[in-house]
Length: 212
Image 1 (tube, one colour):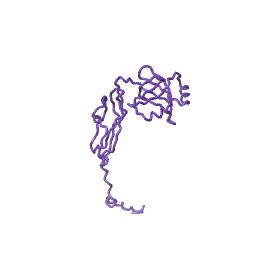
Image 2: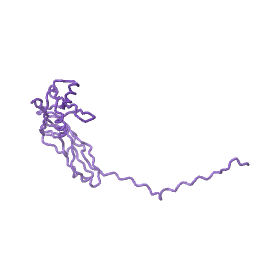
Image 3: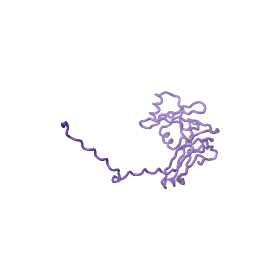
Image 4: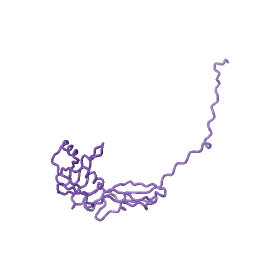
C-alpha cells in the first residue's frame, strides 16, 4: 500500500457562505465519515487536485487532520461543471485491523496474439470485488493479455491477486476474450449481372372520342 498523505484542517464553520469563502482562499471543504463521528475538514485545493491524479478509487490514503491521522478512501468528489475545480470531497475512513470489501479496477497490458491474427478483443469486466485487510488491498489488478489467442478467454479466477486477498466476485466471469470478426457481407452483383429490366408498358391510343 502506497503512503499518500493529505494535510487537512478541522473545520468548525459551516454553511454555503463559509464554504464559498474557503474556496476563494484556495481551500476545499470536505468530510471524513465511516468510523465514529463525522469530521468536517478543509484541504489545500492545489495539493488535493495534484494528488488525486496519482491514486485510484481503491487507494487508501492517510489524512492528517491537525496532526491526527485517519486512513480512508476517496469516496466522492463534487466538481464545478464549468472549470472542473473540486468543490467538495468525501473520505470514507477504514479500520486498518478489520477486513473490508472493496471493488478493484482491472487493467489490461499487451496486444493479444489473436487480435494480430484478425480477432476482436472484448473486455466485458472492468473491476472485481475482493475482501482483505486494508494494508493488502491492491490499487488495481494488472492482466497480461499479450498471449491471448483467438477463441481464448481470461476469467476472474485467473487474475493475479496478492497474498491475503480473497476473491468475492464470481470466478467464472469473463474478464477478456478474443473472438473472430464477423465475415463481411457479400458484395452486390455487378450492374451487368443484374436482372433484365421490365418491358415497357404498351403505348395507349392517344385518340379519344372516335365515332363507331
